[in-house]
Image (cartoon, rainbow over all chains, first blue to last red; front, side, top):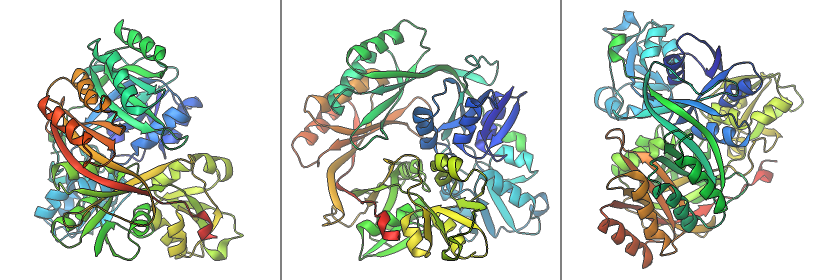
Length: 288
Length: 288
């Protein structure tokens, strides 16, 4: 089985892909649209793309392309804790650090640590945390450190000078798996944390009252929502649709009931997927 | 007056800053947290940071830092249409293009155009659209083009080979202006499109029913919501808060009424700001 993911190597997306698909062939693509096109063209069986709070990937890109261009079913989800480490070449363990390289978002995520411990060091921005780790690995003569994850440390044989230097300890990135040919994922590991149904709901008229009505369809059934987000449509200003995640699979009685009720109210409802969600556990000790 | 913004030059953030603050001194900073820290430290009077759908800036970063670290009041907003152009050095107007340089998100935003017209060209990722334009300007000997906006074309004296090559014509990026010392913005231009009050609401208990109740407080007052987004708190899994934008300023009678009602229900409510929103108009003809 072949799975496309947003390259390069050593990023959180590869970490998510490896965590879900240990034995499968992972194929890096250069952009999120190309990852998804590869599924549509049959070059790969599935793709894994960031959907929430990713570092290198633009999540808006994923949602826009999924909704407007390639409506691939979501067959699974995975959450990866964001743990950033300060990595150096093994030869430079004892050296003072003069420059830090990483993706701009990763550098910003470690703002407090950098201010407190390395405020004198320069920064250089790289296109991904993986690219930064590769740069440090190939320049042992420079007194530099990369901010990157444990997978990058492993792949580029770097050593951590400081671990878990990110500002927010509960920060997570979520990914979804998209496929036209595969069934819903059923994995033994990583940890299965929830089942989810993702809906896209278009409102018939004005926002505030209509949204209130939409939520009634879920509330009186005691269906638990785990996410709601309004997004402008790409057809002009003033039009919105909603992305709603409901706890549970769509083969329950209640979700189809809620969907019928919404349609009766004049809403457009698309089920983007109904799927299990997994969670990778941080393994900081692995890199020691 | 000094305004901090996320550098480098030639990005959509600078375009937003220039559109709002024509006569003021604009000071680029390297990260969103530094932009905001500069306000808190009194180095600048205000900052302008991306809040929705930006290309180079991570919007999660802005919201996280605003909510958890530097609670600066929002005093204004501005929306900038995303218009990407294919820019070359004036000497290379007639040359075939062998390589395209830009920020990864900008390249992904022009996916359809690149597939249709330039599928043979290589790509090289840069840290921003502005940096890509600068690279093209300083390498006239290479057959390269940058994907960047009209401001970058102007600043680096590039010429557009193709204009408006982005896939979605209604794509926009929104920015907010944060300040502790300045009053709400009152500008003659650009175009004033709306007034907005941004609230952060923390729910007392379970998500689905409680959110429904929260929206009732707005719905029965006929207060129009223009955005709602659930976000996990950084204190652990399973806790959420909501970002809600209400149409209108908070000195109306209705918004304080809704806030009191929410507090009586046990919700935490913070007003992040109540402010006018402006809109820049695309000026593609400017770069010809």
